[in-house]
Image (cartoon, rainbow over all chains, first blue to last red; front, side, top):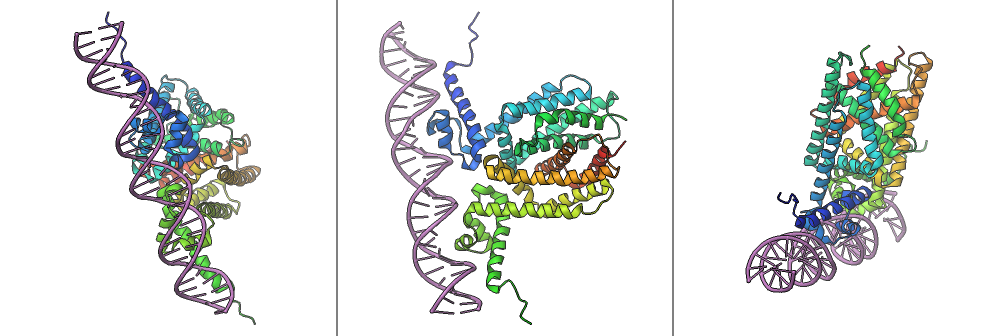
Length: 206
Length: 206
DNA sequence: GATAAAATACTGACTGGTCGGTATGTTACT
DNA sequence: AGTAACATACCGACCAGTCAGTATTTTATC
């Protein structure tokens, strides 16, 4: 009976502004990197003034954190949904790969942003820990997947799951890296099938 | 008869200074990144003054280039020497891997610097091209190696060599990346043997 | 349901500090 | 005494962050 309209309208404008600032920041940060990116440029692109920025973020670094956190949770959510159901390992593999590749295709800026994060992690212990935790979580998810697959007799038993998970991630990340640097030469789309086949073959029981 | 003392002494001092500046720059750039690294800090660390810097480098970016070029040629030289002789593929593989891993162990700063280069490549077309060319050269070297191994009947024939080379590089780079972000969890040294075995096994003819 | 008061969102000029690069001087070597 | 290597003081551009004020939306009161 009572009105269910929540999230009071007074908040709407502010949330919107914050979202638009972050949207603009993606582009500017990808183009210029964190240090070269100026707050002025970000707000100009978002159509606001400098003051608006400091209403929503304490410092420029604060924005950086917000983006990192958002990206991490988004990726992990996507991953979790992808591997929800138990299927032949090869199918899961293909879905995971095409999910990740698709994300980069639809949002090419994130390739640059990711490189930016990685570089920052070298210099900022907190960023490093956050990214390390993200990888750790990924490894866990993959280990779970492989473990289930192994119990079902679909994966060879003479393999260290931690090592396998690390190697799988390495393969994907490394491919992304090369494709990022030389998109003409190394095409992710073209690698999807061979990658799926190779990795599945490797993990299959003889 | 004539004195064989070459590389006139007046040059010696200068070359030394340049080398010391670059040495100091490695540390500062790894710590602060290109944009945050100040010329003042670099020269302070090297024990020189700003004037000395601008005797040897036109701009700060010039230093960046010098470091990139030096690193690329050094790596390629090391690689070429490592795979000079024809051996069982597994042995070559192990030598290459332990060569690369050893380089990073002896010179841990280069992990950070590499991340820095990669981030810059996203924003600077020239850096991107230079790094892309480096990867291209690597792929060629690996393709040659695999090709020879295949002709000798030591490597399976149903495999695309370009894909294999890309995958090998991806594996190594990706492992380095993870180890860089979480050195405690992902230990390169511990991965040497399993990595060698896995990759050799994959490439071996059934 | 009009209006005053209060809270919130935003503006944009300004400042304090930083830093790449330069100009000019000094030292060391030949 | 001439020249290359290096030192030092300085300048101008740039930029993160501040703040006093304006605009807009929400709440309170009648």
